[in-house]
Image (cartoon, rainbow, N blue to C red; front, side, top):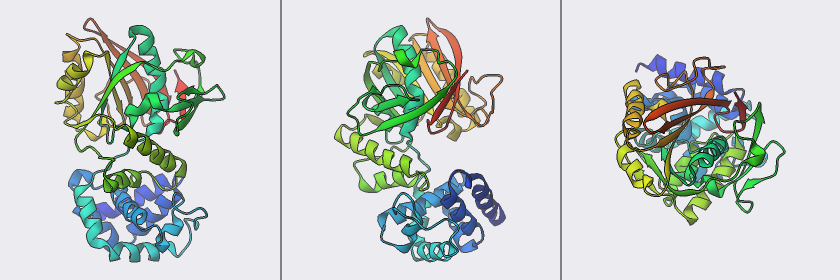
Length: 356
């Protein structure tokens, strides 16, 4: 990739993230204006040369040094942060990064963008409820699981609009989700599914027992969104108490063995949440084909929360409200027959569900 393309990516990132993440936008803008900063991203593998990777590397180092002046701009670290448009930010950023340039290079060479957004469990839960009502006890295979935090779905508390709390009322993680439209299964009747066993698969799993790994997971969470950050930390502590079962493997090649392991304990439910967009098109096609093949002999369900614009090979609705929005789709195979239900459009981090 040429240098001008890297700079352009940071300029675009600054524009796109400004409405939701003003600090990230200001950091990206400052990086775009400084070749000694944006050129560091050129050390990453080609497919990982994404502005969010360099921003995560910087965030990782700020989390390791929370007393540094740069941390004063980070809302997830500082109670009363400096505003993102503070003119001192750019120079402070440049000094911080260049003093740690070797560490930054090492991070972008070896790490990948990995987000484990537990808020998405609020989107998955109603679909799990639908499946559980039909088949009874289930098992959970989370593909692209990162640290496996979404496997903790039964251990979170959930509040939809102003309805009573659902799930584990004692949980340190409470997920709030607003809804619009009519849910396929009334949320007032929603019960926690009987998930007998869960397993996660990831090409490069995050080991939350390792402090550096856990900090990288936190670093991939945008610092502007402090609620997500602190919720993530609470989920990590829950997972450390009872670690989820996570194995290293390819999204397609691991399906057969993983589903075979889980099917003895309950109906297998596969989940993918903003994971398949990281696969090349032919592997997304292979993923769907492999599920079709496995379902010839085993009843399966698949809950997908992906953006149609980024994953056109998946069975999305033919008339998405916005192809860049996250679409919640339930695919079921019963006696080898596939049925696709387009349930809702959702916020990518689980803050709202708009039922179809």
